[in-house]
Length: 328
View 1 (cartoon, helix red, strand yellow):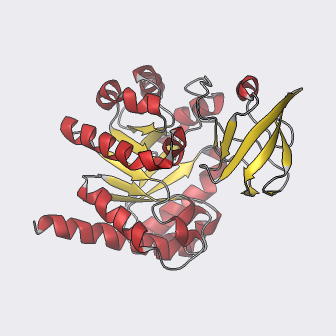
View 2 (cartoon, one colour):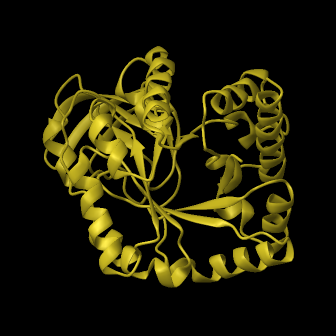
């Protein structure tokens, strides 16, 4: 049976909504540790468990680590970026210090899974001046990508290591390692988990760039499940190349007998609308036909306006695809 994950966030923080998500078919949840630590999420996790008990569900709990993923810093309030405006990267929009040397004239900077596009005009002390090419609202701690730049960060942050030490105590069943670049990244996480008594905690390798795709032969044996993380993976080149990358990863996993998950924008329109597009429903259906062991929604349940409706569409489409396969 395909596992169906939602993501915790403000839109599903109350007991009633969590219970309705389980009733709609959710079998597991993701906690994004780029925004919160395990200890500070203790109350939210207790509400989650209480809702699961009422619904007779024993949910999977995945923690999504910070890892080497690039993210913007904390903003005092949401920042409206208008097309054509000039903004200061590094100050007005905080970025990791490792990014700053790569802010050369002409460099593209993609924010929030590519929703926002900036282009560097000129370097400045402590950052760079950039023009907004594709605008929108930027919030704190959103993903950042610099296509073509080789920005190297450690596989784990200090807070990642702290969360891994506490994972077993909080009932974590799986750890998602972002931007996996090689087998050594997974081995480092596995070693930290084992040292903390988490040998039974599964390790999910998120494939989010072309380096991860090329390293699949060495990553698949080192992970319990491969995650086709289409947000940042879609930033690694022209978006029209993403479907082929997804098919390539899925095929490699099937050949190796390794489970894989498909995630990102599966029902993105439902953050604002109560009904998905036909294309989104087809995307979910085809992911199951391709052999996905898990599917996940992120912003749809974390911050969307219709979290329960999104979960219902996700679950019903998955089960319909499973029924179709059984009838073949």
